[in-house]
Length: 203
Image (tube, rainbow, N blue to C red; front, side):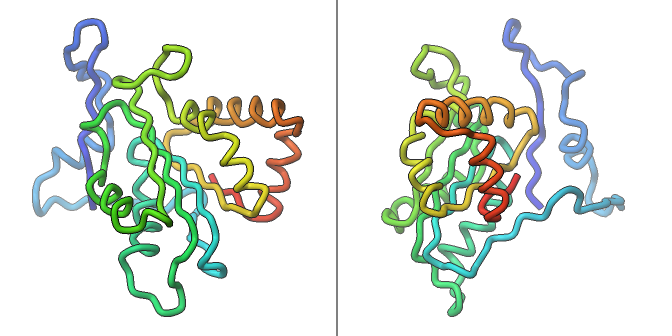
């Protein structure tokens, strides 16, 4: 299990605010070897990598620790030797975090870029280090908008798209996708319904 202690720094004072610590991560990090911990789950949907088409395109959108399930996908695609699933498609990871220090598994993902340049793309949105086109903070939905033409073309050609992370990221992403769809003369609600019907979208 990989756990990173979640702490919050007040943007005005730059000091840590203990009242806003991550409950679960701090509980686990404060536990001692040998402590017994009761865990329930899994809860919500289980997202599994479809392996019926090893040449499919997979667009993965995450923030923070939401990248962890996608790490499993990518290890399956690029590290495991599975005769019946030799990945020959495209995996495109969009990751939104606060800053460079907050990126999990960056070395691993960067190695995939080097070793599989035709099969892997990796875009990061660092909201405390990067600016979007309007001069505001760079969030993952800004990266999606930046590459929206490519993303929509891939979706039209049957790409799978997945979202994982804090629920709070979804409204911004949905608004961006809706705006882009309207600019393309499409109805996002209809497209969303079709993606779900085709089982090419998972949240």
